[in-house]
Amino acid sequence: MSVFEPGSIVEERKDFIHTKGRQKKSLKCDSDSIAGCVSQRACVYCGARVVLNPVTDAVHLVHGPIGCASYTWDIRGSLSSGSELYRNSFSTDLQEEDVIFGGEKKLTAAIDQLVEKYPTKLVFVYATCIVGVIGDDLEAVCKNASLRHGIEVIPVESSGFIGNKAAGYRAACHALLRLINSGVNQDNNKVEKIPMSVNYLGDFNLAGEAWIIQNYLHPLGIKVNTNFTGDSTYRSLKDAPKASLNIIQCAGSMAFLAKEMEEMFGIPYMNISFLGVEDTSGSLLRIAEFFNSHKAVKAAEELINREEEIVKPLIEGYRREFQGKKAAVYVGGGFKAISLIKQFREIGIEVVMVGTQTGRPEEYETISDMVEEGTVVLDDANPTELEKFMMEKEAHLLVGGVKERPLAYKLGIAFIDHNHDRKHPLSGFAGAVNFAGEVYSTLCSPVWKYLK
Image (tube, rainbow, N blue to C red; front, side):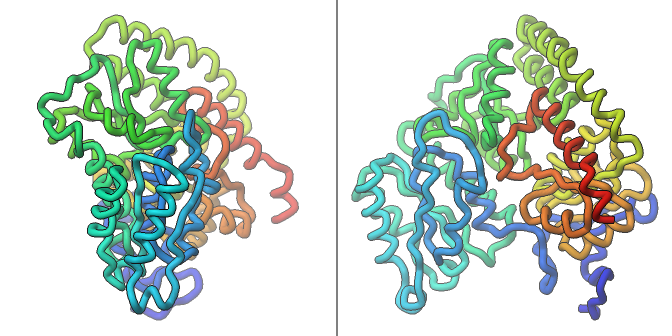
């Protein structure tokens, strides 16, 4: 590795960074982080927990040190229409002696105690890094517990050293497929489909966003059969094979699940986005057109016209305040980054830097085609790179998650949280107005003039 100097780029990182117009547009991605670089990307366990934690009536048991259990509902904010069991975070609290002698007995006792205290039909047991090191047999412990209690006890193979956050997404999808494909759904060919129904994949019901989308689809005559995984339950997940179509909001976490469900249950899928006016309108129309229903398409057009008539003047009012402003984007997946570039265009702000934790090659190609000359595109960035390019490009605003917030404030630029711990919806037409309003409140705050 080259000698690190403040503000410089580590030599091995250069293939992960691309400036449009100066270099060929291919970008290295979907790889493990470079050793020695403090990546902003989260771990395997975190990826799995992101996807599964919104299953509301499950016991979520973290097999590992107590620190891993700190990732709780409190920093997730997904809402439930029923059970609140998922708001608890349980841990086996592995200690040194467990590392030496193994933690299987402790795990067995923890499952037994939890099932007795919190009667449930579903337990997810998450593996953490140390479990991968000491080699506890989660599969055997969970199988025995499942037989002992007559419920589903599903291991989530999310220990470290097997990849990055994207590997955690896949571990979660494997756990969901295991749940869906067990018991009553063994004979997949006999699953009766519900006409005009969709499964909504990759929405975690932050601030009730899944409910907003349900309310858009209902007047179109389209039923949301199962959410993956916002406000989902053991029963609703079991019923997932009955849907006629899978629609995917977060492709990074759910594309694998959608492909597997197409193969197992014959459910086609499409990527959609409900971020911003343009994407929300386009997605509603595409979903209605899929069902080849004139009535649904007409209802979608009426809803779009009605909603756009309300929100566009509001957004235009904010847009006038944003002339000459520049934004930087650093989010989890490539599909969200693409939607945010469109959304910033709607409000008249140029994106000068865009990066993701788990973007895929085809997504980075789309991003590169969309952005202006000179825009920096980067995969799996570290804080030094984010600082360097935001300063070079003179960004006024950063959109990211909880890990990026301190960096933005230290640099004296505005920040918007587009991650899991926000408390207001950013999806749909209402969310587009909320987004523009949040951009205004942070970007146009008088506080910034005192920090320069």
